[in-house]
Length: 534
Image 1: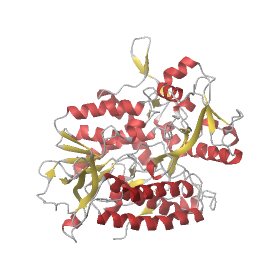
Image 2: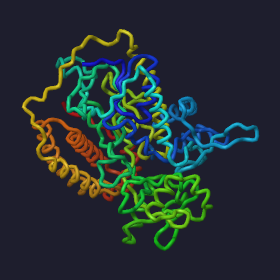
Image 3: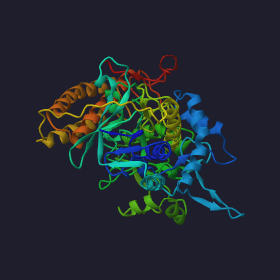
Image 4: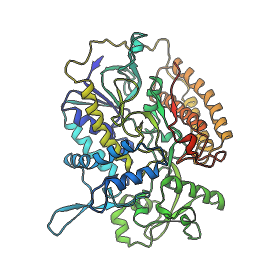
């Protein structure tokens, strides 16, 4: 058993920024299941939303967030996170993050602000079209320099250890983690009174997603098994514009491109978005994704197109170099040809229920970023609010940790039980894991994606119950591996999404069902809450 003042699970913007601040107060372990840079943050293209200009205001940013969230965003939470944004941006810059800018007449650099769908002003700070990679790289470099942060790469968090597992009947709280060292196969016991989940989302629950392979819902599944409240899992955001190409199935085409004037067109070159919303291609993501889904089904075509060919070629290459080079490698010159695009699963708006400080319903456990549900995103996330939430709430979470459990002398001398494998043997049929993985993702795409029905959700729930039983038997009979742990978390998270979706008898934000196509504010302007029955 090894003890730390703080344990962070995940190495994206939330986890890294928390660790850098927490290292000033004690020892920190960062547990991350692959290389530290393998995160959703590193894949973020568009940028980070924050009020920066005199033409903008906190009230406008708050109003845009509330509008996108379709009535489920608590205004005090939105106001707190939005108003804390500028200070968090200054901190990122101090850590070495560079945002695109121009020189003023006085020689001072001014940040260049972009605009995305749902925003009424330019407020997106960006680094070309690889903002997340810039943030991840600079923060990770600072973490590696710290002698108070231990970075445990290729360590997979298996489960949260609670006091009830040590002494049944005692008040429930988090006291540590079981972690699999995937390089050696050994399971380690990590002890701390302050555990922070920053594991990202669950895009890999779906067959088509913009997310990296690591996004398997690990944090939500772990928190659920530990008894935490889970909220709003039905609100899965499908990014409207994922590149449609047989050689590259998960490449995101940033919304910032539409913010710079790109238009969605059909195969005949017709701009179809004005038929669905007066904001056209700059409508919020839920509206745009459903519109594209409708156009594809109406025309029978495999995709629609995103056209920025009317903009100067030099501007396109300079502003979107990663997208330009990637598409060019597939023989698509975006300065001359429209980009074939389709919607794909992108962002989990629900998650482990927390307050604005990231505190969960389990004492000793905090959750920040996509894994958590502060309420900021409501029923639909406003573009580029996710990186903002991660860096702001991680700071609020540290303040909350320190106010409740000051590091010095707060760790009790608990000896946690070691992991026991019992009579479990090594996995002998990986094909079973891969088959179940594929089946989960296909049924979620077919039955629980952009448009849903009661019958589709019932079919998904029935099959997932059987799959959960198969996976659970596999889990108990074989030694744990990364593949098995991801499958276990994937089926758990998929089941939570289906259960939440089936319980909401209306259409709101990202949850659209043909059986209940209208929004019902009288009965359903509330969060969906799931609590595990012990």
